[in-house]
Image (tube, rainbow, N blue to C red; front, side, top):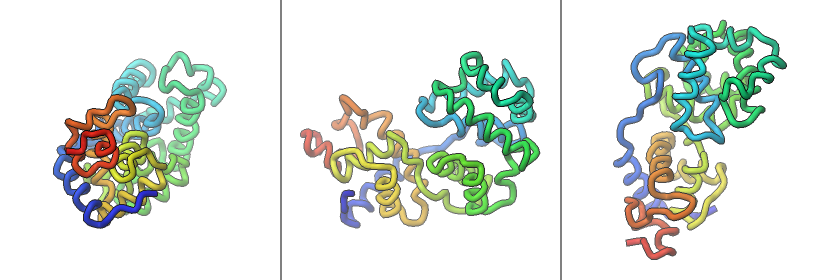
Length: 242
């Protein structure tokens, strides 16, 4: 793992936070109820190995076509046996992987059994640690759990620091290239972002994601346009560090 200086981590963090901008989360940014909470959580469950920009429309179409009442989302999903749910993989088009489709039913069953089908009960009047523990018990996945907790903190649903970044492909690529010139693992990414922003690494998630999506592409990156270029190892190696 790269071993950056404290000065560099501070400088990079300051640039990222300056460009963080407004953070908007579908369904929970403008108030929340049971239906909004359920749709938000479904979107989070689907948020891996799929473009984030597509998730809102996927969830909206699924609910409108097959569920009707989002407050009953999890009850309706689990009203059929798992086998029948799996048979509807191609019909529902929730995810490109069958296992991800199956995972929706599994987590939905836990939400019905433990929280009465109301996702908001996972975090209502709770601390960050309590929410994190509940998400772990639901086997939500480490990176998705980071995103859920961060989103809930961003929107004031829970109080406290958001925790770690969601170390997805964009975030790991940007952090790795800036500090070492190449992509690094999610674990290494989390360690570095904790050095960059000790009190609340989650605040770095959105600007890192944006840099990865807009400038720091896997191929043909736009280094010359990126505001991190001056201190970026990758940009320096490719002649775009100034």
